[in-house]
Image (cartoon, rainbow, N blue to C red; front, side, top):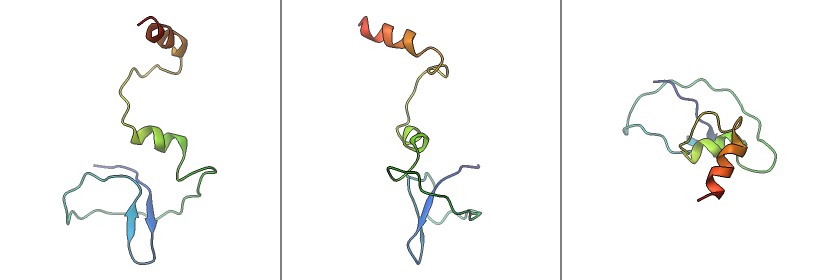
Length: 74
């Protein structure tokens, strides 16, 4: 399994910035690459969106108006 996650180093250990679905004591390999903080918060918009685990069609952005109209008809 490969997954990109962001970690914060507190001086002693790395702490994930989002939940990690691994069993305790699972051995993993990490490649350390510093990441710049995004203005205005803990992470980028896409990180926040991913953390919400939203479920929907893959074409939301190209058909946004259509989906909004359907929702307003309810």
